[in-house]
Image (cartoon, rainbow, N blue to C red):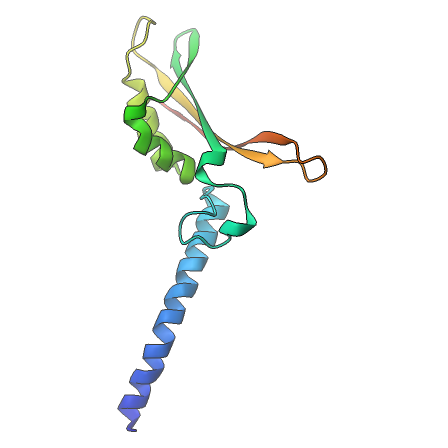
Length: 142
């Protein structure tokens, strides 16, 4: 075996392992900084957590002068909602909030903002009683 063939062999063994470590570190970074669900982004840690996308829920409030009304996310925005629940980054929350601000409502006047929150279900370690914990929130002005 020549030196060149030996170097290629080392690279061929090293690159896949380095990529796997890179994906794992990126997933851990996103999970710690913006709340990525452990069940996504490579799936590292998924079996150690019940924090899947459906164990999270969104509360959205349309803001108008002197009024704050909770709104439900329509099915037509289901993809944006799923993204916001799974990876509640500022960009994903902002995209959903801007769409919610455009929805018709019985209130007069345009929306001055949208407050959006992503909550996750947590279980008490002793009683196993479920409870909600605010994961991330954002106020967006259209």
